[in-house]
Image 1 (cartoon, rainbow, N blue to C red):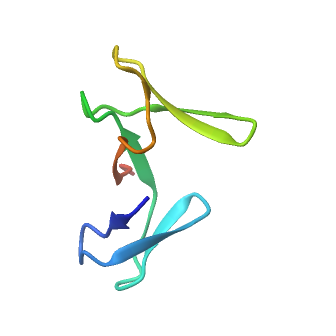
Image 2: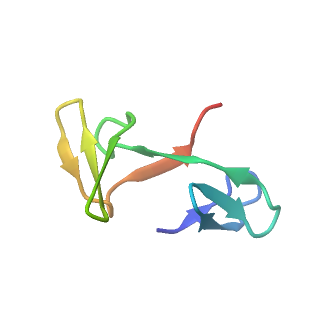
Length: 73
């Protein structure tokens, strides 16, 4: 997955649960969103696999289709 910093558009790299901008060094947690309804997805982790599920009627969402945004807080 590729993600760009919302502040400076620098490329971000994943470090555990966080993403860090290589340009401005901002650290953030990203939240997966459904590409259909743009609401948060449930993250399902089992046997090393990660899947995404929309509880608003769109079912399982491919990780290639997931939209990402910085989590509030």
